[in-house]
Length: 336
Length: 264
Image (cartoon, rainbow over all chains, first blue to last red; front, side):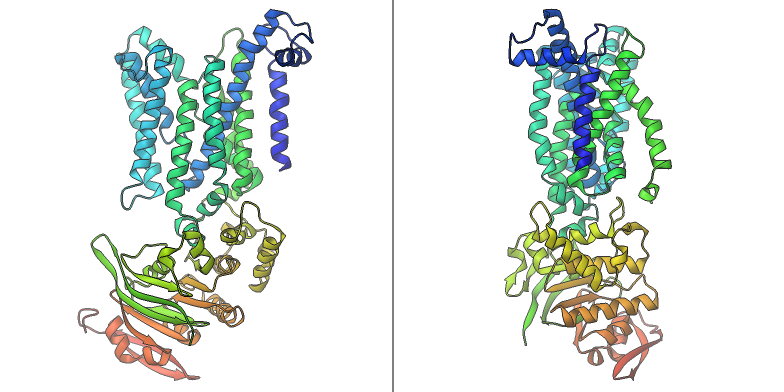
């Protein structure tokens, strides 16, 4: 409990600190004054440039990062639990690649689900859902186990990646730029409109997922054991997969393929807190948010003024950290 | 005689393969009932159908005059507990957490002091309090079996089902587990139904033995009435001697009958 509160505290403090970093020097006090000024006008004297930088450029990015990290961490956590597989995550199940495929289809063939400025996002969302729909649909077949679902997800991941490479090959330069801008996990495109959308989906999905925390605890011992203790494993699995896929689809549609958070955040949470999902789920979310904030700050500032894709940084710092944890961690018997 | 659990006209099949055919049983309160039979005779399937882990095609399981088919899964879990042969070990759980899972059917969102106390009590009953904070994955087979029994006890049910609880254990642990089960049935007002391979273990510890063959009940009754040469030949296809030591029948298998197995 203390740990989760500490995570929340770190997120708030880190956001305050990170928001000051950028081409325009701003102090923490000025940041909070600017924010307060929005709610209680005319108390502080704030220049309009500062107001714009804080409110229109830096705030969306930070709020967006936190929401995406939170959502991906939690979705990875619940997917691992219901599929009883430590390798499950939104990325390994092909949902991110599905979204990427949707973008490629839009860029190369101009086939779109939605018109207007959101055509890429609409496609990404639709194809991400399509991918998870196939995985969930498989569970309806007789004899399909959670292993079937994981394997199907991995297979779909390969399929979509292959298709994406093909599209990259046949695309024109212009189309390729469009695809690359989306495909590498960048959150510079976020604005208040897209954040509102993400926030609405998160507010609906996250409590639903968290409400199943107890059932997830029981499902980690296997379907038969779970059933004998009153948890209908099959129903919970489908419920959790549907809800988390919806959230993941919404997140990756806006920010692109971000591979590592959904896998690593739940594992770090389990290494620290053990196996009770009533605590592990919020911790995975908090850790996801912190990791992603950190990755984003590095992405924005390492080679200033140019920004590298956040997904790339995430993998670059995440992988060594993760390897260190599983090899040197206190509980390395964990994966025995 | 109080009937604790009765099964009426139970059928079960996986696709076209019929596993259980027309099972009818009445099981008395406070007994250890062993279900024996060759591999594939339907022992485990019967256990799982009773707990509605598998849903039977036809027929009815009735516990304390309640039809299991009309109950929600969580209501079933308050009346019947199940001890699996082994437990999935993907994520690490401490022994305490594993046993606390058994409290789930009685809990809302949070466990309270009573639930924690209950967990300590059943751990004490099985003499494994010192393992409470160990990881389940690190225990030996015998210890894991005891933890799973503790979890079932924490469920506070009148009926406990065990699926081959002794199969992976050495002789000392086999006797240990069966002794524990026997004393629990006597002291906790339990009825235990045990799928088991070892006929001599079944003979020594059960009040009733149900012998199955090809998805049907072949014989049922007291150990000395069921474990006879004729039944062993008919069900297992073996020549065997049955000797009584301390009024308990002991089966000494000799050799297989050279006809096609099970067609007597």
